[in-house]
Image 1 (tube, rainbow over the protein chains, first blue to last red):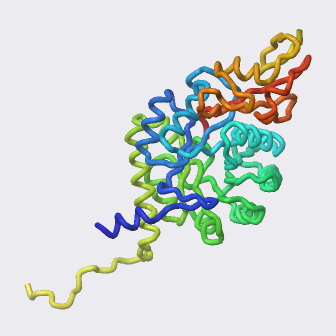
Image 2: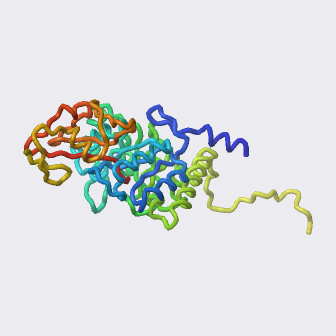
Image 3: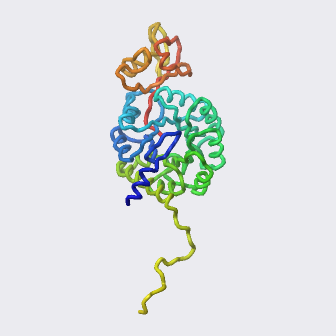
Amino acid sequence: MTETKTLTRNDALVIDGVALNSRLIMGTGGAPSLSGLGAALIASGTELTTVAMRRYSVDEAAGGGTNLFKLLLENNIRVLPNTAGCFTAREALMTAELAREALETDWVKLEVVADEHTLLPDALELAEATEQLVNRGFKVFAYTNDDPVLALRLEQLGVVAVMPLGAPIGTGLGILNPHNIELIVSRASVPVVLDAGIGTASDAALAMELGCDAVLLATAVTRAQNPLLMAEAFKHAVIGGRLASQGGRIPKRAHALASSAMAGRPDL
Amino acid sequence: MNTINLNGATESHPEGTTVAHLVAAVTGRELLPTGQAADGGRLGVAVARNQEIVPRSQWAATAVEHQDALEIVAAVQGG
């Protein structure tokens, strides 16, 4: 028991030299109220949370002026601005520059999607934007397809984390191609964050068991029937999956293998 | 008067109106000449003028011109 606690406590996720004690990165999209969102973020134990950049509005659903930013600051949650809604490298660059200026961070979750229907990353625009952002001094967290070749390319372009999708954004389908995720992990030398597609706690645990360094999710919590319970479920799922990954699972076998010895069996 | 587009809406502002004036009006917070909030908190907004970032240190020195397009953005829920 003591060992488990020690392992969990000393197992920080380090990205761009910053140690995060939680391997659960939260998104904020989809929450009906800011206060509910705050409670869920606290319950999740997250230390890093994404936001989108939009026109300033006092509407609470849109962030209530700068209330969302304040909420994160007050709870010591590091902010990770995203470039959601960008379809071209040019738009993503502009959004990242606005975020750096507004939120005073050079971290950016780079999202360049192909179209509104699939919301899948556009590999060419993503690579182009990555190169330019890295040149401008941004620390890029690249949201990418579950493509081991592209993931490695992005790493070579200088991202601080690669974030392959489990399934398309908002689908809750879980991890559609665990083999690719495993391959991405096995070749990466930057942290791998499973991003998008998570539906429930077991999906997050699986991501960690596959060797991912962290999990990023939003709607699985914010649109759950009880976001508070789900936030806590994910907190434990990520810890459990991480421990299992480090503990080393037994190999799968086609046939049974007794765990009780046959030797010494009484004559009955 | 200058007619400008601010966050998608057409507005008229007198000559000499600066980006700093607009940010203060939109956010309802007083600004220091540096573009930081006078209340000591972090302001959390950024400005693009005609698709170019205006650094906060330049807000007070940047007068808006007729037919400028300005975007004042902040962090909202997402991703």
